[in-house]
Image (cartoon, rainbow, N blue to C red; front, top):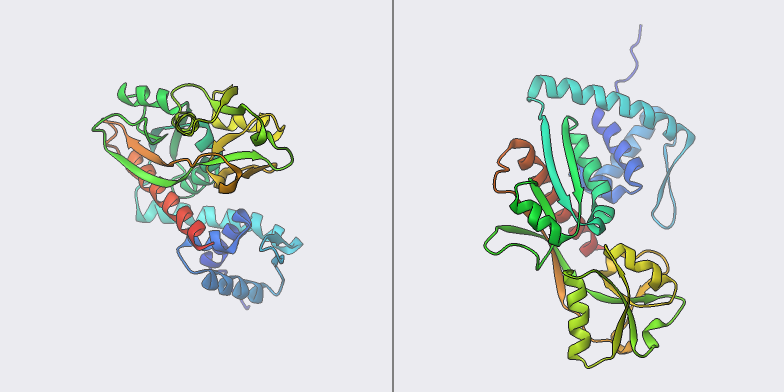
Length: 297
């Protein structure tokens, strides 16, 4: 009796990552191969199965065919079994709890992908996420309530080691349908006191001698987007994080230049555990990969 051809887990993993990420480029980042190598893996898998699994649009997005949707469910089951066998025979399973602090804005922007990828490689590690402003996370870090935390540059305690994960310019943000930036005094929507972005925006306006009024405040930067979308105010943000309805202002539109800022990662004083080491390395790798992908785009 002829046995069916065995399916290579590496082919299934590349296919599953493409389906999850909706992108050949991001899937290639996850498996540590080039985009062309991952494309060849999918071609080989489709040849073995005799069916088209993925459709690529002109805009670069990826969609599953009916056969692809069926395979994705089965591939995940096979990969989970494969990885479970591998871990049990080749390495001790990492277990434990790691306490991660992050501002709300970073949680929305970075954590979904970051945590999903971490769970792929460390399914038995529990990540306890605490969302709070950077100013509060500093106190939690000092009080040994966190193992790791992300925070905006400028809030870190003096002489506390910090790893810079990302840096880039702040920009003035306005509505793409309205023109609140033309009003005098300039209406601004900013986070509450002790926010480094708020301080940067107000400092720039005051140095430029530009009249303004703080029209809206929010506990998080994400909360400032609503009045800007409504055409009631302007705010500040990195341009990589803008939702639909907002745009970065041009230099010739009259608002003063803003400084660059950075996202930092700090480690708790008593967080010397294997699970903290693993998450710390994973966060650094994810930001490094994300920054490299944006630079190449």
